Length: 176
Image (cartoon, rainbow, N blue to C red; front, top):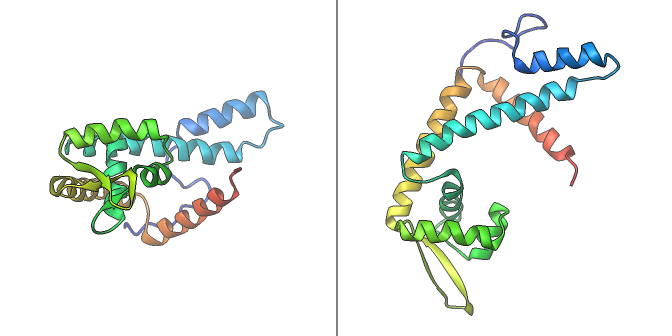
């Protein structure tokens, strides 16, 4: 990561679009505390912009972000890289209908295989193929390399860890 210190008030980066929105609200509703809007607005914009960039990286490997998520869940499960469709749906917070479409496309591309579950006659198992494993290994590496380039150009390692801790606090406080 770079070695710049956390900027003090007024010495940070140039003003951005979120500052303009906060300023507009301050002009028409000076009674509002827009501090949270500034944080969440930037989190949203960063997530959207970086998500789009990462998705372009994944497309180089022939998969969308949603398909990457399926392959990634299978890879993270460890050898033999097999989960049931229900386990995948729960991990990715998708309906079974949404999952079926992704599985169909990935199976047709030869990146995963579906087979009967030997312990449940009605169940299926979804397994990464050798090609699927190759694709996810390359795609996750490329996506992380991009994220590192963006992250390391803006924050020191300590700043990144602190930001991660602060965002974890915000995540824990969100409504259920």
